[in-house]
Image (tube, rainbow, N blue to C red; front, side, top):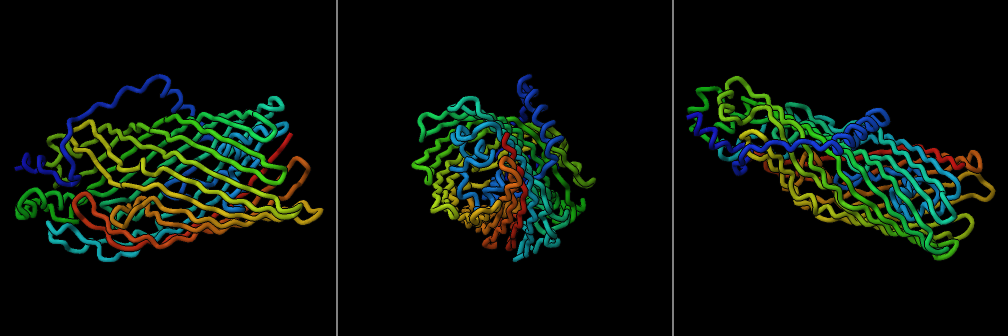
Length: 475
């Protein structure tokens, strides 16, 4: 009977797969992983929230945050050009250091709208609360250095967090079988160079060495597993009833991936600038561990090697993107800017985890779509003043196609940015930037099936406030 149950495990509804052994790490990969991990731990100690669409992190310049990043591809005033458009670095004279930090205060709450178990086990309502406030304040840092080598050549280095997400629901919430803790952090090291081809045109290129670390946890309804594989009476005699025999799984792993970025900067005249940049996709082959917690009355389900602690691996692709930008100085006081960002989120179709044990593959379907982000900004510098003031607005599309594919791990939806910022010039070579942004969301609905056909139904309510400070030093 137990063997039949094991063979019929429907919790993941996946095809059976042979156990696979995780490949041995190469010496080079191991070296880079340790270097980047140390940088991430000692310099950052960061956990990122979802601040751009999907799990992108737009916060790479406080100066540009003040105008909703509308001028980022044409920016030549702070070090974030290493990230947004490496072609602009050749405009820097001397050396430039930019250090920035952001505090993001997100709020994400869930309202249950009739979540229930699978009809195969009765379709009764899912028990549990709303999950509480699943998001918490986070700190996001970045560092950039740009140096003029010759009048036409410049080099730069950026260390930042381009992708990330983090949320945590209460362990007994109604959606616990689909998500409890979710955390993904990337730390990117980006050396780059820029060449001024003509007085108007500059090009740039960079290498991205990216470290990724992830953790995903959720509950397992062993009662529903039993009911879907055996006669309910057999399960009941062992106390394996739906929602009454919960276990737990935690997936942890890390990876190092490589990519590149390209940029073109064009100064049409002294008042008008154009920028175009491309950042490549980065594939991560994440290797780690799967740790299971199984209730005593469900231990029999582990006898053939399922639901046991084991090595695990999965592949994740960070998307490539293209950014177009325009900025124009109307007069000595006023300037305007605009940009459009296209991101190939269609790389994110599913998250498949393979186990070294007999555990079937764990598959989460996303089927994300490509997105656009549009931004407009304006800046004002009073005459004979050390101050500059900025404001901006942006519309950011979600890659999530519909409520059935929206995950409680990333309850994303279209968002609108409203931002304001300032620059104060302490000295001729020392600037302080400050900015504030509020992100408005269209409340995302969810109607997603879990591993045992449990269905999470309801609506999320979301908003984010962001403040940032940045110091630029030219020398």
